[in-house]
Image (cartoon, rainbow, N blue to C red):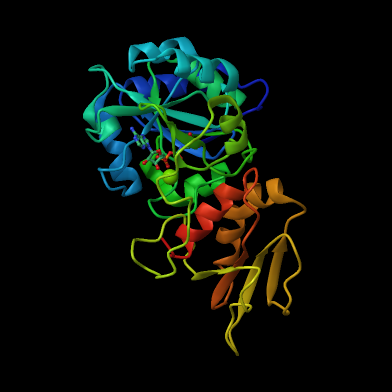
Length: 320
Ligand code: TXA
Ligand code: MG
């Protein structure tokens, strides 16, 4: 069931029914400023495991716990001075912190890693829901596993259908890319996933940050791992210094910021980098419905959300 809400003044009754569903072990999809999340009571292992089956998600991929207030994080994790400082400055917002977990959190959330991802989203509908719950809400992106993340309620419904008990519709999301995931369990923070929160602001506060993926360097041997964030059509990246990556006779669409140097069958062009990030996943889902051979995506610069766009393009095209 989709319930349409006024983003700035979400209906209290709808929020109360959503909390009831979560309390009784059900699944509620809700908007955040990044993408839509598929939520369950994060302290209820059985409810959390139903998230994995609804998405078809591998159970070794841990989930983020969402909070309505930074103070509640101490109930599930060790919060040191540095973590507290980051939360004070940057929450609510698109930044997930990985912290040492305590015994209150079921293994279904952490995949047994000994750590837990925590985040306080800034979307008013998410905050209304989370503040009405007495428990943290475990939520991955509300897409079928492997598909592009949903940036509106209709896409959630299309992917998850009757496997979700309620969908709170707060309109299209603001950023369109998932949160930045930062591991702060060691001396040097580690960027586990670039996302909607810019790396530059983290470096300014924290100093050097390690990147386990070799600075997201490209391994140009396709298909070594599974595709992720991927549309049903193949995707290729247009790198600025490479020949344009289409073959004679191919039907192709282009997504990016600048007009392609060849004439495409269809183009979705964004005004700037933020708009590219906001619209990328929706563009993949729109273009995959067309009778085409391939989607070509422009490789952006690495500042701001550029790093996150690069990461999603690498995965969607099977290059990582
Ligand atoms: O913006 C977002 O983060 C959205 C909204 C709904 O909050 N959620 C989201 O969740 O993107 P998901 O499950 O699709 O991605 C969570 C990412 C995964 O890459 C997962 O491996 C990582 O966070 N993660 C979660 N807990 C972790 C942990 N304890 N250690 C390392 N990585 C973790
Ligand atoms: Mg996801």
